[in-house]
Amino acid sequence: MSSVLKIKLTSFDYRLLDLWVKKIVELALRHNSVVRGPIPLPTKTKIYTVLKSPHVNKPSMEHFQKKEHRRLILISEYDSKLCAYFEKMSLPASLDLRLSIMM
Image 1 (cartoon, rainbow, N blue to C red):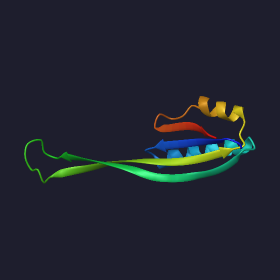
Image 2: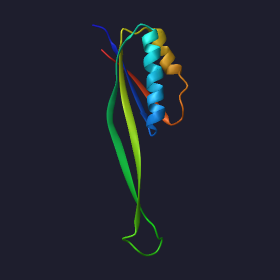
Image 3: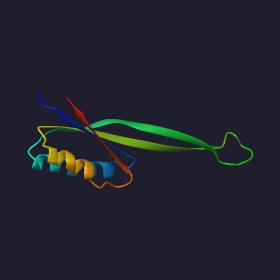
């Protein structure tokens, strides 16, 4: 039984996320790996409520939201060079990449 490399990407900017997902998939395909994905995972939304005025008017509030977009890529039949490249990859600060190996 072969192992599967599980790559989970998260970002607040979905365009940046999709760009890097495309780069990762292309890189894996160049190394003759079998790629499943990108699988879109549910978006996490965090809503913050803040008073508009510092003293009065409790009904007057502003709502801000922060959305965290996530994608999952499963790569099988990969080599150690590909795994090492993903670990050394230089990513933008707003993008988070997590690697795990499933047996």
